[in-house]
Amino acid sequence: MARARIYKPAKTAMQSGRAKTRKWVLEFEPDHARQIDPLMGWTSSRDTQTQLLLRFDTQEEAVAYANKHGIEFQISEPKTQKRSIKAYADNFKYGRQGLWTH
Image 1 (cartoon, helix red, strand yellow):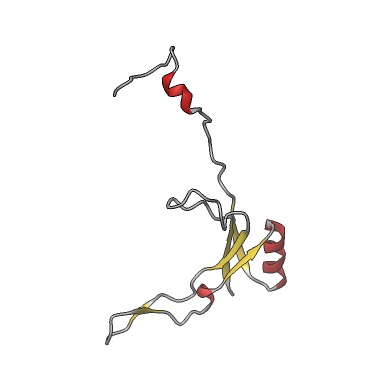
Image 2 (cartoon, one colour; image 1 turned 60 degrees about the vertical axis):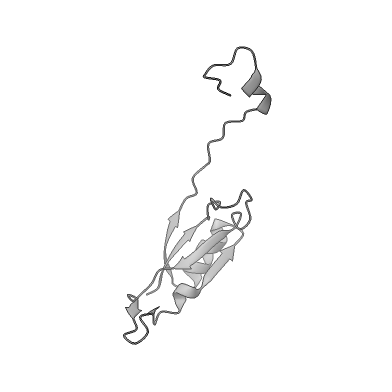
């Protein structure tokens, strides 16, 4: 039986944009271990489902798809990002707490 993971991807650390983070993803877990080719040394696998990545607008759609096709799944809830909103002008205000070095 196929196993899958349903999650909402996090923002990449390399970019400030939020592309590809709004949709839910269904990603299959590997059924077989990867093997090393003795001639070339490349890593390969017979499992083609690991190459498949399905995107859904909502978590419910992903769960419905998995149930319909008999896929065992695990849901990873997204973590909320804690933001501290500051203005650039706060670096120069009079009663500033903290060290000022130039």
